[in-house]
Length: 111
Length: 114
Image (tube, rainbow over all chains, first blue to last red; front, side):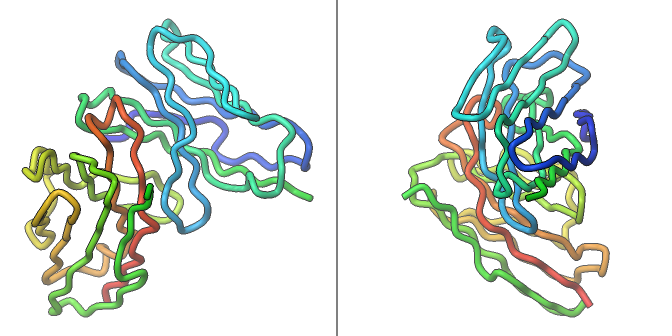
């Protein structure tokens, strides 16, 4: 079952603005990952954050993790049209051998 | 080479047909996965292979039959599918445990069952 909830389900912003997506989960985790999916294509791994980490950066991406609130956020700064995609969080809440994906946020960057 | 390849890209099949999806990776990854994804939904795990052995079957109907002939190849055999099985089928691989290592996804096979 998919236990991750993402908020918002859809987000539309202007190019150059920042985009923030949130992910909540229900059970304890060891790691949380974020993936991007362009329309009808495969997923691309963005970042992995461990349960003992609070924040991680990768280029224009910033991920935070709050295990007390069972939530994570993904911030994309200075958005570009190429960032238009669906973004999924995924956790190891189902066991170490599999990922459980959230429902995803559809991000649209308007030029 | 950090690529996962999938063939075919598109597949249309009737409910009585037998077809196979193929996935290949040459990254030395020991875990491989099949996912099913419906439009505007997250990927749903179907099968996990670890060291060429089936380790997880997420209660997938028997009309889907996975096979891992060697550490680089993963097949999904399809037989007597239903129209509701139409979806994007994604293959992925990872160096080790899914929760610990990033997964590399192929571009998917768009399956339509008529």
